[in-house]
Image 1 (cartoon, rainbow, N blue to C red):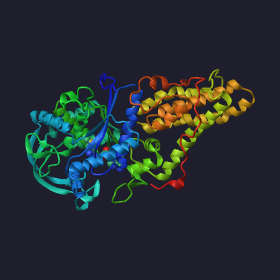
Image 2 (image 1 turned 180 degrees about the horizontal axis):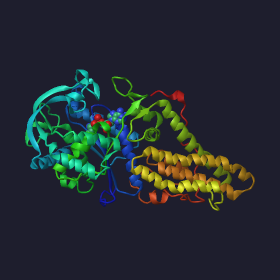
Image 3 (image 1 turned 45 degrees about the horizontal axis):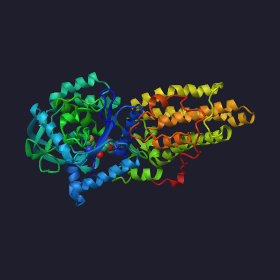
Image 4 (image 1 turned 135 degrees about the vertical axis):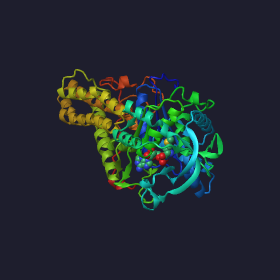
Length: 533
Ligand code: MSP
């Protein structure tokens, strides 16, 4: 992989660094799938891409979980991390860097960064009093708590009272600079609803926040006072920086930010917006570093309309889901069904219906019957599209010609659902076109050129759809391309020339006379009775 990217063309994206108190849940899978789709799209454009994911392993929450399991915290983390990597593999995620915050190289970066902020005079010692939610790893305002001092995000947990000496970061120094940032860069926080949440939070006035803990030794010591441990969030956010550097090079902050900084997009869930859109840019400003391009906060997933949780007994295990239905199905459902940025729901019947309708019927059957017809009527080769005389054929061509640009814009704006809808519209139009033009009867009438023109238009539509959908369903796209006679692999990390956007995203790329592969169903219809997750 070429990581020596030109600054203007390189693209970097992060998922949150996930807590390892437990195996990955569907929420972590959701963000990671989305980040993977964006990374794959930019690779298709031929840009050098760095996709970062990883794990957030320090802090009280992880320490307590390890203690409950009677494991050393490091052993506990190692076990859970293996579960993350294995799920990302199953989901066909192509990450470039997996950063673990317990890695020794990360500590070097954290120390250097801390020193910059310290030298700037933005760290001081003070008394911290307040209610702490260990599950959030965050102090909470009394007015934001539920009855009995329960955390609104973890209603089965009570918050804990803390009264201790901590080091503080002077967030209040950055009130104006942050407001200026939000005003100058209106797309810094997306979508709009999230931006508004942050603006009103900042408007209320920013307070300094503590960046160290006492009586906790699962974390890095504060460089200037090793009796204190750095706050897990201060350490975790910096994981994004450590991840940028080639793991074989000696860790160094300057070197780490030399190629890929600033990150283009931080993808996160809405619950951790404040950390990324307020604390993080202020920390970076203090250290004299440019701020990231964008923070995008997506919505929360529910199951059958209910909040998911272990205590409610209605969690959705991403491993079960992918084992049962496959990576493409899971990736497609979440990105197609839920408008990215809004909350969304998982319901197994809807899941099955969507997959059957779009992937098994509209796309799969279309390819299958068209390839079979091409075998029968055109000698198993891609038919000749010319002469193009049928008006309807021009309609598909008209849709197909504009589609690449529409879909690219949708992917750029993380409007995955819109991208899928636009692609599926071409597929649906192709189905209708095939039924209307009935190439089987054109063939019987001896109209070979017309038969070929119809079949070409449909096969080309399926090819284009498969190409444009490949960031979302790379496995399916591979299979469609294979049946169309190509030897390409959408899972290759280095795109090279062979599946570049500028060629394949255009209508008419499918070469006549290319030998077609054998027709095989690309997506098996799912029977409702199989539903059990
Ligand atoms: N460790 C921090 C992130 C540090 S980033 C430097 C953290 N980890 S987490 O594992 O708790 O959360 C990871 C992500 O999962 C968050 O983006 C969160 O929004 C997301 N989700 C958790 N539950 C979710 C749903 N039910 N639905 C969608 N996403 C959800 O926070």
